[in-house]
Image 1 (cartoon, rainbow, N blue to C red):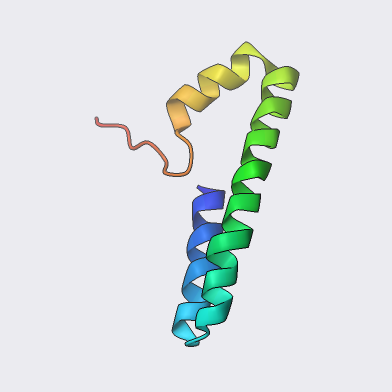
Image 2 (cartoon, rainbow, N blue to C red):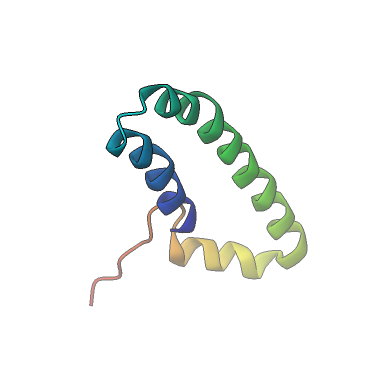
Length: 70
């Protein structure tokens, strides 16, 4: 959920301020770099926590949190 919030913030701020060049910069440069960072963090977490991280990941989701039905 944290990264989804960051992406929304990075893309919405330039739109609110009518800074379309900044929006393109964020869309073409910052977002891909953030996605690379997420992949690298996933590898580190898998190596460090192993099976516990895999179980955590299945229950929480990625960019968008999973909502449990009761």
